[in-house]
Image (cartoon, rainbow, N blue to C red; front, side, top):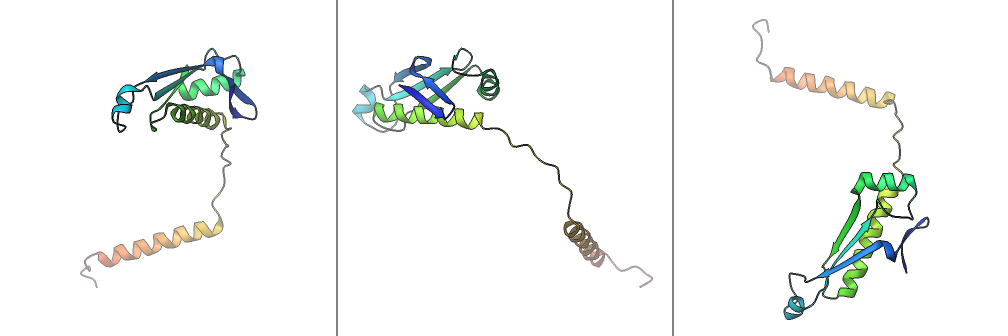
Length: 135
């Protein structure tokens, strides 16, 4: 079974390393005796499913490996699914193309409003001054 990230990327289970440990927090004796905390690791550098561009983008974002931890729930199965969802979401977000900014010029109205605001500010500050001897 593979972890589907998006339409163009699925991570095979053979590339995912699962580790389980005891979880802290609420749960009483169950939390003290059960390995419900899930740590999911994916080696980006050695992955065979990534293109060169995807690998470069992911290593820039996360480094050589991506590690996700889930210990929110009492159930190991639920924590496994949470960890898988989190890993897929982080990878999908990092692979989204960055929208380039198109430079724009200020509009005539925005220039006018800026100058009027400066004029109002100047008048307000002039009114705060002490009157001169000439007045």
